[in-house]
Length: 272
Image (tube, rainbow, N blue to C red):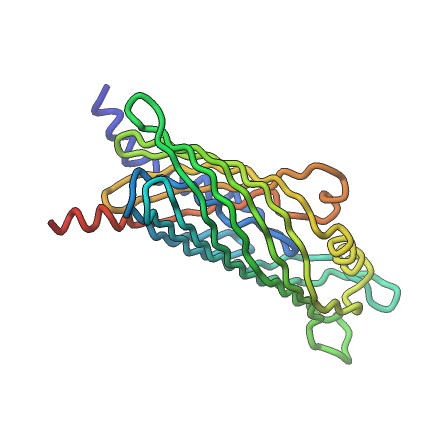
């Protein structure tokens, strides 16, 4: 039985990655970055990681870091970049046509929080982090099928986000799992809207602005496979939307990524 468990431990990450490939749903208006669930146990521990999300119509890249300078205190930093292509219905000369929208978003945030090991063997980790970040989005819509104008119609804007994040994680042999709840306040700042892209898109962006600041609830889980000092992770973050207005905004429902992390404190132990 034990041999079967260990053999499963080797093919489970590959099964998880295959499920990830068909699970992503970014948005051209707002997509949540991967929630970083801390797995710290003491001071001077730190982890850096890179993540990727790849689907038929999008590519997302991430970089994350966390460090504990003092017992029970953590510093967190995240960077997020995603590009996607979707087909949207736009207007031209009182008629409708399908336009290709290329969306690019980048976001960076930092947080401060505390963590506390609990359980009979201190195998669980409770944490609470808070922080803020800034980002920008740019949507480029293909021009109508009939010239004269062949230049894409561009709309862009900046946004900022505040968050508080309670989470729980567990280490067990080669595996680590985590879950968290992230409460976010998103404010959309200055930007430019090209009205030539049509009524559907302009009304949706105007609704986005009128709904600002928005309160969103995001839930996350992560599964990690540890090969000290490395960790291969599968991560999912979902937006929980509470009313019809937010549904009309066409926000992302789920963002899934695969990551590779390095526990710097374990790397130092290996050199001794």
